[in-house]
Length: 430
Length: 169
Image (cartoon, rainbow over all chains, first blue to last red; front, side, top):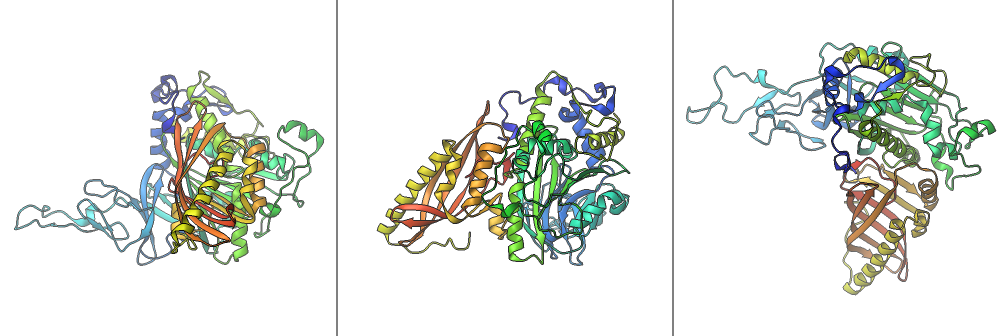
């Protein structure tokens, strides 16, 4: 069911959707999150302006999606539709998907290849860099009508964004004096980012898309919340794959506190052993359950990394997934306070063997909108959105590992979420 | 759309018999899933089956990824057990509708068929919603009129999934 198909309580109650000047962050601000960050239209509008259109690099594409001159894809920066295009000289350009003339969203195909972009309404044409090329009847007909003499094509191109790439990953920004992407991502985050994007050419394996009836920030929080992994994901626990005692890390970048890496190392045996005292804490542990087909949980070590799993949250709209050998990026498109869209691109490397590709595909069953783990996150976040939007209670509790903000040295911690909100409040003025 | 699923010329009587067998199969398969008996679902497949659910764009562009991707009945059994015993998701009712059964090729050992499907989902206190609309590309192993799926590719048009897909297609 899409969020728009909600039957009971489709509209947000006014108490959860107050004007922005009436919103006050709770006292003891590091240890509570007010519900209105997830439910308020005003807050959402300010997020779009200050975060997605502010001083951030936003993921828009993998270079492997637009490998050749003329290749393009529809994409988004925040909720704003953009086009990612590769020009004749190999450079990548990102511009608003809006004709400069009357505003039509001119690029309609999800992806494709063309020599120029032509708006179907009045056939204004743009080159692959977004510059206005041609206007039909620019000088009128029989010396009547047409554009004024001083109309210059150069002044009426598509709205262009700043573009940067890092090892095949394309980012864009509405801010044109952004710091270099390396500085933005910070060394702590680049370490695991560069493990996946190490310069080897990617092979696209395909796409998924889903609407999640939850606020976009919840997706970040969920991947900065290592506490949930062994509790919600009973599949991991039932099959002994990740238990609270595994070697793991929850890193937050120390520059901003907004990017994160949730990492864990799989034990050598296929099924982890669980101590009696930990079993008591995990209701979903079932002794002795085994898989009929164990191939899909095999971990083939292919990277120079101490981790078998790294889930990276790159502020504000990218998740990089390395779940053992299944690799993907998830592009967050915020869709109002109560909804977000997730655009998934799964990939391997160009030099993968046929068997490696199939292993990645088999392991892909863990993640995605029908994944053994992925599905549960979607469900949990939907429950949270319904809870915060329709209840009288007005805040949630964030007290695990309460003394710390930022990188955590254990899994039973919400320190990385606190770091994210510390930065968020600065930017948002809360 | 998918290689290996081209329409071949078939004698009318053979196509009729094959269609009846395939429609029977769909009815029983859907009854099991709609009845909530997901652990019986793998019984409809051969041991070395291929099962994939993927969006239209992946099929059209030749991308191999599956929203669900299983090689062999054992992978289906693991999924069925995960769904019925370990996974956390909101309770829901599912209804499958399979129509437009089209026999693409038929021999004594195999039937290749294409059908359209609609998957309706009803959550607690929710509307009944069209969760997926798509096409089934099926390759059946045949013993007389008894069929088992050697291959099922469910190619959905509903690319923007409403949150998730919990139960099989």
